[in-house]
Image (tube, rainbow, N blue to C red; front, side, top):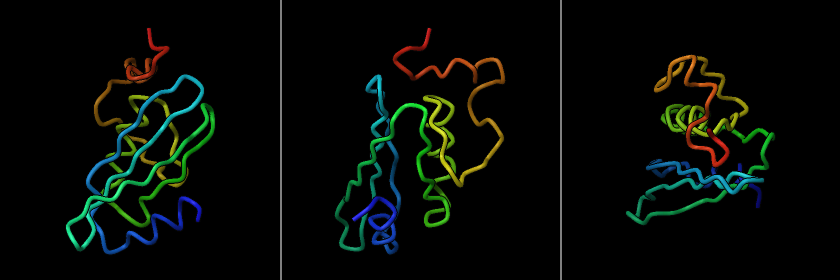
Length: 104
């Protein structure tokens, strides 16, 4: 089952959080949901540096802010989430990608 199929199966769940970790050559993104039975479900996505991650905004509109935060902090681009506004960083700071291991 691919990533989007797993996301579609969570349609009756609530998105809780997205967490991103930088592993030098790739990013590891974890999606946390609370299902109707009040259980926390985690879905993992590995994205190679320089590749785009699929956006889940069309399934979970609140993901727009989570994805934007990961984009600003790590530089991960989410295909389908074209939110241009910066939420946390200024234009100058946005170039830094402060959460990346190679940030200086």
